[in-house]
Image (cartoon, one colour):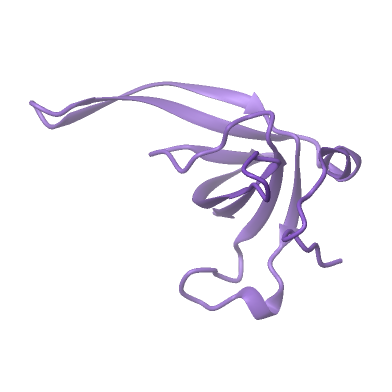
Length: 118
């Protein structure tokens, strides 16, 4: 099933097809620009209402999108960003966030399209 995201993706569809055991792990980072150090704090895991989709073969280019990358469509209840060290947890697997795109056809974020990689 190929989803077209150009027209927006209602939250009720994500609710209907959401996959269990998906969460986003955010790491708190404190950067000291004078000493040029970064201190990693505790991880915070937050449940994520999302749908996991494999990329279509036509989307895989081998450089930006790899064969094992996952496309994750998440609702806007949690703000997702490509911060240093943030990860997506799916079951027992941990994925690195490669890219995040806001789906906001009228200027209001309806969902996020996340590219995740092992």
